[in-house]
Length: 333
Ligand SMILES: NC(=O)c1ccc[n+]([C@@H]2O[C@H](COP(=O)([O-])OP(=O)(O)OC[C@H]3O[C@@H](n4cnc5c(N)ncnc54)[C@H](OP(=O)(O)O)[C@@H]3O)[C@@H](O)[C@H]2O)c1
Image (cartoon, rainbow, N blue to C red; front, side, top):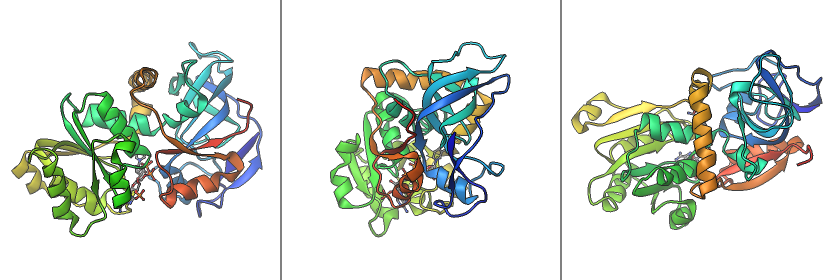
């Protein structure tokens, strides 16, 4: 099988396209013939060796793929060859076949395409757990989403609405994207690229929340945007740290949490995937249900063939993607 292979950690475009022997399933695994692989910001860091989890070399990157079950291990129940599945893995999705734990493969309803399913692979699960299990989102809440035109951002805004948020505010860079906030699924847009963001973000948020601030912040950006967003929280507000797309770890001062009765918390979706597979399966089923009801719809803005994987990663790195980019692995759809 053909695969993108990292033989040594290095530049994101330095991985090789190689022919490898087909994977063999362990007793609890399945082999998936990949149709579409999901491309994500962390894949860049995984290839560079700067991600918190470093796969043993050599490996194929890629945290999710949609395809068809080819083989199942001897202890697997509930999946069979021919089933359409979304596989959520730590790495291995940029390949014509992947091996995945059976309990990390989710049946895709017939009405959902491989592309849409793959695009719901990582960022929608992340947004789901961030909003429900870390931010305790309540119907009627107001939500500010930073990095709003990215993968996590679009997913978080769509899901916040689907879960009953009354007001969703998109934090984006540049007036053009502020004007397009509604197109991204938000009620309002705020510009994260203004000078003195510490004050300007707070003022912009207060102006659209009757002076109260937001109940929830979803932050995949970090840096000064995170520190500013903390100041835009309402009394008893919750900020969820999801990532650091800015490259900077924010400083969160404990006295600020106390004075405003607010919480700052974190979310890493791979822990839910590995520690709570049944709960993750229920979450993925809920996401597919939202899609079928028409209340969420992943925005796939670019499709790239597997062997041009570096174009997909470059588009993410350069901020040229709205929502998601995916790899067409070329196995017949
Ligand atoms: N915790 C988890 O389980 C988990 C899961 C998946 C991803 N993540 C992390 O979440 C982060 C975002 O992932 P993603 O898939 O959403 O990436 P993405 O699609 O590349 O989107 C990142 C967004 O962040 C914005 N951004 C970057 N630097 C910024 C800055 N200095 N100020 C304001 N906005 C900035 C970008 O805005 P522009 O468009 O203006 O460039 C872009 O919209 C990454 O750090 C990733 O590793 C975490």
